[in-house]
View 1: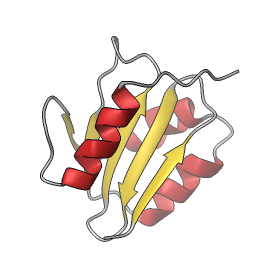
View 2: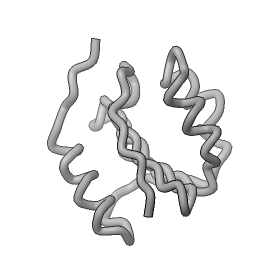
View 3: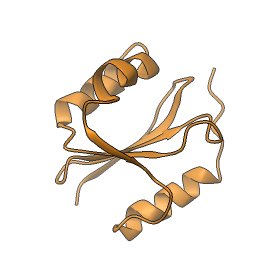
Length: 98
């Protein structure tokens, strides 16, 4: 399993995890109490490249990802222990941006 694990320099998005093989994306937002972690399915690699290169990750998320892929709010463990462990670490960390 090839997982991209990237912190973003964004006021909206703290971190993304992307599984290249299954095209699954997890987005951890900076405002965890307002926005939970989201899980998306069927997200192509090109969308991740666009997100990582966007001038505004938040705007890119709203215009390209949100509402366009099957998604769910992550409220419990995933089926992948590696993802679960990383998301648990991220939920305990607040990355200051800007």
